[in-house]
Amino acid sequence: MEQEQKNNQFDISQIPEPDDLSVVIDQLMVNPNLSPLNYFNDFTDAGLDSKKGVSGGIEETGIFELEGGTKMMSMTTHAMHHHIINDPQMAAEILVSRAARKMVCQGAKPVAITAMLYHINFSDPNGQFIASGIKQGLENAANVYGLKISDKKIRFDYFGQHGSQAPTVIISLVGAVHCKEKTEVKTMNPGFKNKGNNIFLLGKVADDLGTSDYLEFYHEISDSPLPAFDLKFEASLLEVVSQLIENSLIESAGPVAKGGLFFSLLRAGWLNGLGFDITTAAEVRTDCFLFGESMGRVVVGVDQDKEEEFIDFMYESKIPFFTLGHVTKGEIRIDDESYGFIDKMSEAL
Image 1 (tube, helix red, strand yellow):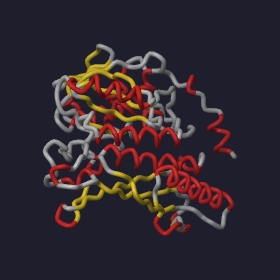
Image 2 (cartoon, helix red, strand yellow):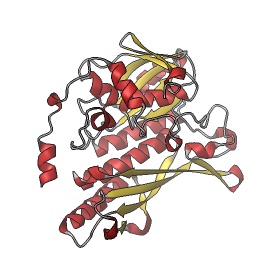
Image 3 (cartoon, helix red, strand yellow):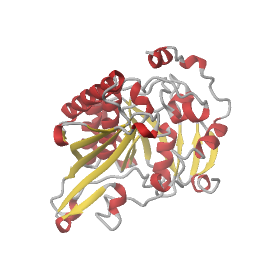
Image 4 (cartoon, helix red, strand yellow):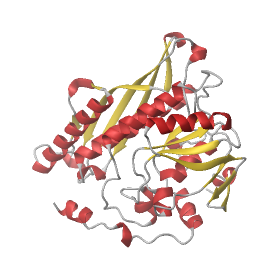
């Protein structure tokens, strides 16, 4: 109840908008959750290039060859810690959706999921409430995405001797990759491919900063509601992304994840040393647009020759989309202001 009251009191209007985006960027770049030099969060991997087919090192992207390359699978693991006590059911749905969004952006189809719930005392009523909510959230997400749940139960561990620990849920998602022939595999990575390609944001923009790294690391506010989220919309968005990949209408796809849109664009640029020139949306706060972590958004790169066909497809899909800008040779520009070059970002750390 105390946690719920704190979240109900959260008011985004009380969060000051930054006067200088470069200050925010510099501070967030040293956040271990977002740093490109974090071994477990390495944005610099070459990844899997769908145009060049399957090559060595693809395991880094989460795509794995089976049976001598005649079959392929995808796997990803995600976790959420203290925020699950805000709304455990929605937290579980968000966690599965994050994993599914990442997997679909790779060109894989999510198939099955398993979960582990840690630091829950099931003998405590609050622990029972969290476990019950997580279970319901997993089942809801599994139904929407057509997933099988391994063991059809949540495994949980509680270690009282370790003292007070935030409840943590970890999920692993396994998917399949369509593979008739090794050279015909339609996979994708978030990396921008060529200077001049157009950049689009698929999904809804929102004045939302809930549980974002920007809110917690820059503003030092840890108690906030879960981010804006709509499970059914997520499923519709992922179906559209799958069709875009299948119809070869996009050259790259990456989920808006940790760090918000700005860091998702950095992830896309780092892979091939390319930058971006974008315009923010006038209807939402600039910090929400760039650093908010609301769900249901994907960044895609589109070849200029495919732009008209892409736009026609998106209009028919009824999924909202936003023209962000274009890929540059390396410079990072936001609303006509330069913020340096992509190759200098990691050097500054």
